[in-house]
Length: 72
Image 1 (cartoon, rainbow, N blue to C red):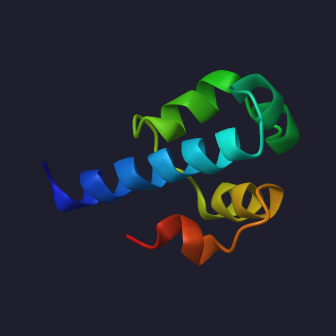
Image 2 (cartoon, rainbow, N blue to C red):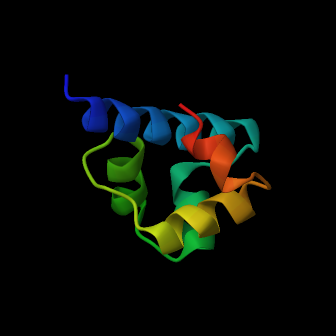
């Protein structure tokens, strides 16, 4: 698997893990972010790349540093 794809997949898995730790469903968390549940699902499964703006918003909503999400 391509290194970039692997990193994007790891990022999605971390978002999923931290979201679940906070007790958010995809529906609830996507609502907080102002995106569709489908968009969030695609980010979490590396089927869609995340924008920097959304990455920052995700980190803030999860009370994490961006580097915690992208520390591969």
